[in-house]
Length: 313
Image (cartoon, rainbow, N blue to C red; front, side, top):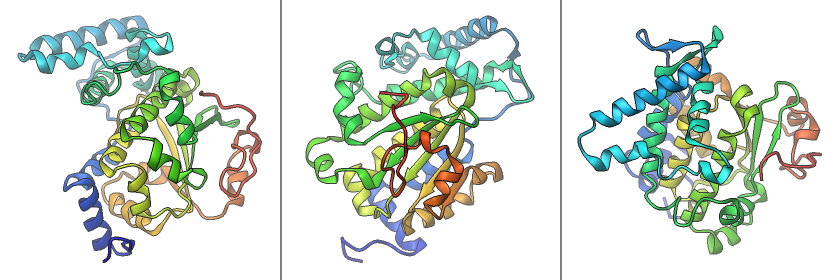
């Protein structure tokens, strides 16, 4: 296969993904999609009061931090790279988002604090792994606006269930501009800022998140030229597997063959519930059936949406 040909078989896709993202790339995605909403365990600590839940969560974090011998590994629980202050929030606000995410499904007045702690630790690991990329400079909106605009990020509220919808339209991207003007660090910062804007959004916390992605038949090589494979996996880990917002659904439009093959591979490791949340939309007319047209961005793929204002940005 020449460097410009797209893989069309399972073997070809796996080979190219390993070439672009390393041998652990597929394993990373297996982990991301295997259980994005976490699990309840037999001995988990469950409480009713949000105040009591917050106190317990903070004590669990402190206990874990104290048990770690190496200062370098303790540091993640200082949350030095958290951008909460840029959103006018506190660390307590961040922890409350995780507790909101960990509500017990059968009785949402109850909060599984142990489950929230496990997710917080994943978040701490992920954020600490970014080094200084998110703090030099501080992750302000002004510092990421160029990246947010370049990736054409749009958001609205679903008029039916109140969930937040994150719209991604690969067909609308100025690929040459991104290649020439947006560095991988710019992309990282833009997506992390946007993810935290969702994290602190009360409606998203309460009703969850939907992704709607027009892939515009973008080939693997084109995709990874815009965003390196390892960065793509890192960001998917954040948005799907770490962010304390429940993923209600992911809608894919004009999905290219390589993504269909890749999702087929991942499907072997997904739960039935997770598989049901990933929906391949075959016809553009279906967008108007699934969503209120007033919640769809203008010129989203082949749909003329009537969204007047993004809820983020």
